[in-house]
Image (cartoon, rainbow, N blue to C red; front, side):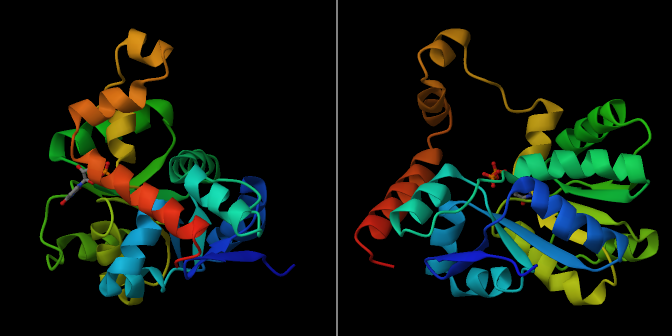
Length: 242
Ligand code: UDP
């Protein structure tokens, strides 16, 4: 079956249900040892690709771009090419880890601070005692350092999760992609922090009043800039200023 795509600001999104993404694309590719570069993109990523040529070139090498973020789904409705559903990268990662455990596929985990990475691995082994962990490494290294890619060549993992945030995670993947023979590669941003318990939720009262987002903004003011990018994305979509 041919896949359906929707292009939003020059980014070609796969328009598919999460179930079909796994059943029709990811699982068969894993079983055929077909190398895959998967990008999950939200409005911030679309804006980054629009503004930064080198990032645009990296993402253009993805086999599939999946809509992660309500903003993308809303935008697709505004341009009258509705996307079926949002598929959060975090969910793809957690489901793939479960699938890897069941099917004895091995995983490699790159990213986050050293302690967070360690705590993440401990937690993931608790949750998935039969998971084959090919290796792991924290995310604070020079992109030219060949240590990790050499380790991946030796251990030949089936899945490689890269939690360096954008654009760094895509820079790492695209820098070494051609050298590697197999594996599904995906950037997963701050996902290791979430599983390691490094990202604290807001106090109950903020959550009760639906103000968790505001709490985060106050705690991490650098997020303002990100939120503004999402606004800019929406305004451009509405005004058709791509
Ligand atoms: N990170 C990293 N190396 C770096 C910069 C960031 O491993 O040089 C990690 C950081 O510790 C965090 C993740 O990358 O775990 C990025 O998280 P962020 O919340 O920025 O990503 P998002 O989920 O918003 O894409």
